[in-house]
Image (cartoon, each protein chain N blue to C red):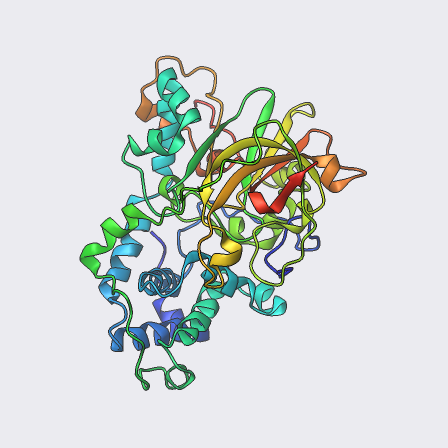
Length: 219
Length: 201
């Protein structure tokens, strides 16, 4: 979706503000927000693509006014309600009022190290050979899907070159919507700065994206 | 260690919102609050940019490891026991005199947790995400880094599940240094590309 998350090339957000010796957390609630998000995700009711889509589906005004942990929590409430774990009445009461759906699993403290060390690999075998090879000229399609996608707007319609053929990976555009993993080949595609940004572009700049095969066509 | 904000949190509506959510999920038996403590401890004390710095230092002293890191970063990094969440599919990119690499996630906050830990706030915020791809030199200036005009800049937008680690150039005057000493020169920002390795003091 052409949502608030698609930030590449947007303007008006001001300077980057690096913080010297930045702490990992700026308040204790951020620690709990991280942990609640990860432990709730570990229930296995949704995948990372659905959670990303829930975040980018916040209203743009809300998204831009929120810190990243706030975005996580707001999206988490949506996911928990959608999957029947938390009700509006629970949230209003600030405590458990309604019964919850049954999770696939509950992540216990003793299993956290193994779960974090395992992560969630999302490379998958693809039955068909890769359509493109390194060096091929390709064009990112002009697409405006209303659902989740990982093709940034700045690359759409632009010509680039296959820089690397990666592996097969779960296709987020379908996986985010419960429509299956449908793995596809992923490629690193590199674009000249001038191809993307035109007049005035930094002549020394190249930008690459990692693109699923169906985002691309031969140029 | 961050300072304690507990007293402020009593007044902060968002802190109350997170606490309520944790309470609801705990009361329903859906999460284990002790698991949250372990997660927080992991990213406060175990998994952070020291991991990545050791990878870089190894690559600086061991050409064979550097070649492996270039070819199969996931396996090379796993050999130092850095694996896991948001580091499942790693790619290392090497700075040179000719090319400087910079990593961003314009679409969310993708970041190589297994080697750098949790991302800093600026990495997840709109100013960096919006400008890194269109005005990287301007962004780098805000980190106090001015690159030579002829240096090529390659920006890696982490739009899929590959996570990028920048291997900065080894500073001059560090011949014979141990890996441990070299790792001290490798900052988090150097491994994102918003900085360079520190010069020896």
